[in-house]
Length: 310
Image (cartoon, rainbow, N blue to C red; front, side, top):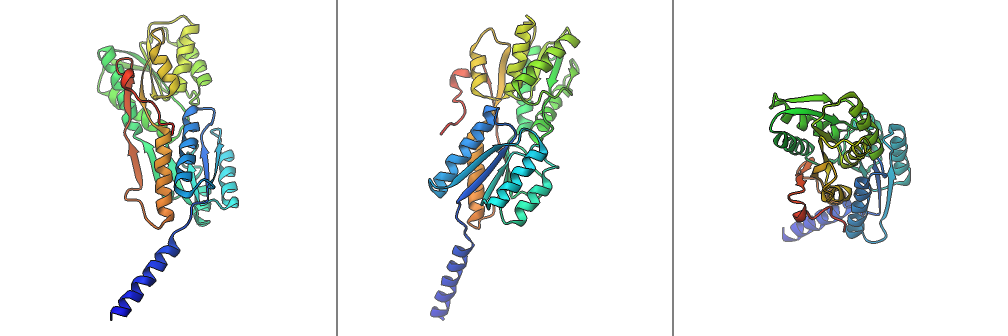
C-alpha cells in the first residue's frame, strides 16, 4: 500500500510539472504609446516577465492607436508568433472579442489590463475606475460648495473611461446645484485632444466653473487651452497621477489642481504575475482585480510617491 501511495504521489507530481508552462514570450497591446501611462504598462510588464521567466523572455509592446483593426492584427501576430501570454489593453472591449477567442483557442493566456475585454479573457486587472471618477468629482463638488457649472471631457469608449464618467456623474447627481454643461466630447485621451475640445468648450460655454478630464493628458491639454484663451475662472481635475500632472500641480499658475492617481507599472506587474500563475496551472482567486486609486492635490503632493518605475 505504501509503495502504491508513493507511486500515486510521484505520478501526481509529474502531472503537475507537465501542466506547468514556461514563460518565454509576452505580447502587450495598449491603447496608445504616445501616452506615458501606456509606456509604463509596457515597462511594468517587461520587468515582471523577466523577473519571473528570466532575462531571455521576449516582450513585445505595441500601440493599438485606439484602432480596432490595428489591435486585431496585433493579436493575430502574437498568435502567429506563439507567445505564451498576452496583456491586452482593449481599444474596443466588445469588438476585440473574436481576436481574444482566437488567442484562447491557440492556448494563449490573455489578461485584460487597465480596461475590460470580451471574448473570455483569463482575468482582468484594472484600477477601480468608478472610484477614480468619484474621487475626482467629489473634489470638484467640495471645492465648488455643491454649486456650479461643470464640463466632462470624455474619451475613448473603453471600460475605464466609461466607469470614470459613471463614477463622476453619480457624485454630481447627488448635488442638484451642479449643472453638467457637456459630457459627450471625446478628446481621444490625448493632450492635443484636450486642447482642441477645451478650446471649443470655452467658446460654447462662457461660464464654466470646473472641468473633469478623463485622464491627465486630456487635463493638461485643457489647461493649455485655458492659458491660450487667458481664462483663469475655473479649475481642472484629471485621472492618472502622471509625472506631467505632478509638474502641473506644483505650478501655482496651472488650473490643473487634482488627479485620481493610478499606478500603471504596478498594474502591469500584477497582470503578468496572474498570467504566470495561470501558466503554472494555478487559477486566479478572482477574475477581476480592482486596484484602489488615490486623490492627489496641491495639499498632499509632497507625500505622493508617484508611479512605480522599477
